[in-house]
Image (cartoon, rainbow, N blue to C red; front, side):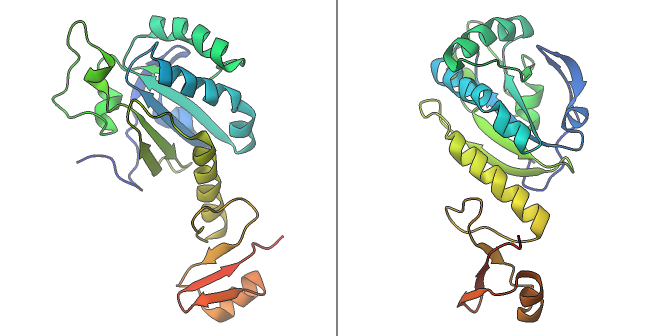
Length: 217
């Protein structure tokens, strides 16, 4: 059975370009995002990790730690960081997991249990290792997105989704389509009108099951 939303992520001990540690220790009491890549020195992935590097202040602002995973080794990761930083124009301060044995890729359901890396492999051999996993401080998977190799990830959407998850967790609300910070949120159907008024003040009833309100200032 693969990893599903609200499952606790496996507490694997991983080797990275910044040393070895357990995934649960890495997350700690923070939010965390794991970005996976099928191979080092690939063009789309290099631009993506460059985007992650440039957003370091945004991750920090949200109390979020980021970590990469690629199926190459530690030494390759260290060399690749030079290219990433050249593309980003910023320091790539996040660790990258060396998943040559595919333990992480299989545990996060990006590859089947019987998968292996052949000699002389290409990125196509691990093409499905192209996912984003957002993990909460409770070590549970909150969101996952998977991309093909020929479409770069939208990091504005990753940030928006992270903001939505953090807002929902903090305020016990939901967020509508295309929601941005500061816009109306959705009041859960389990909250009575009376309780909604006490918590939010005025709110808009769009449909009997759809009520929207501003978060209290």
